[in-house]
Image 1: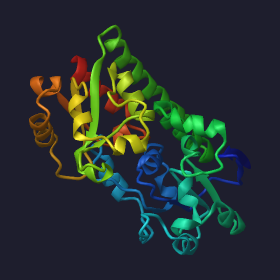
Image 2 (image 1 turned 30 degrees about the horizontal axis):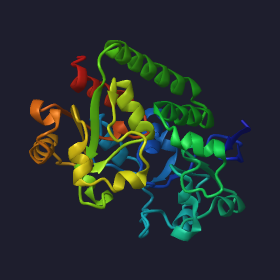
Image 3 (image 1 turned 90 degrees about the vertical axis):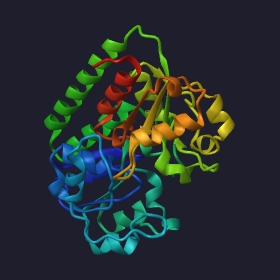
Length: 314
């Protein structure tokens, strides 16, 4: 210190490690889980991120133990500007640029700067919700991958001066991924469909939410799979209908778990009944993931589970 970083085209300077961090929601747990993974959660004064289940059994309780600062989200599921300022943070972190938009009742990065408060957006998501994003930022967002999760960990490691811990974790995860990829090398790729039945509100036709593009495709690809809806935009995924789902080639079904109490076997059986033509329905081949499929520290777990289901790697 002093440390100056470039974040979404802004120069952000830290005189010391931030000690009163506020985490905005953004329907993410990648940031709070990265803090916990690096052992720096005691720097958080208020966390608004939560998720009902985790691919790391210990993580749900660890997230619950992080202070919430009494935050109450507004109708846009974000922290109102008044609550941000009242907590007097020295750093406000968002998983996406759009959370700093005053149109949704949030505080802007300029307003935070004026108040002497630093702000930070998870690097891969600089273009998400930012109309003025550069071509480079847009390309990075579209090509989100497991490496994006590692970039977040390494960036936080630098800001909080725990670089070695971040590097050790990333190197260990890369070694785990390399071992999985070695096991599946040369195997015929299976068609892997990733759905979250508990998020049917994201699909205009009331079907389970279908996940594709970016990091979701990368995770499937690393497990020697192919996403039948690879590369589609969020809007296109939201409009998938019964006919498209029925016509999809599905060798392996991945059930995303979102809330406590959801049962992957029950959800899979329901979809197999509705789509009996899938190869996965005939062989009853499925697995489950939760936060490991998203940006965050547990992508290697998701890759391992999908590889196990598709190629019996364990």
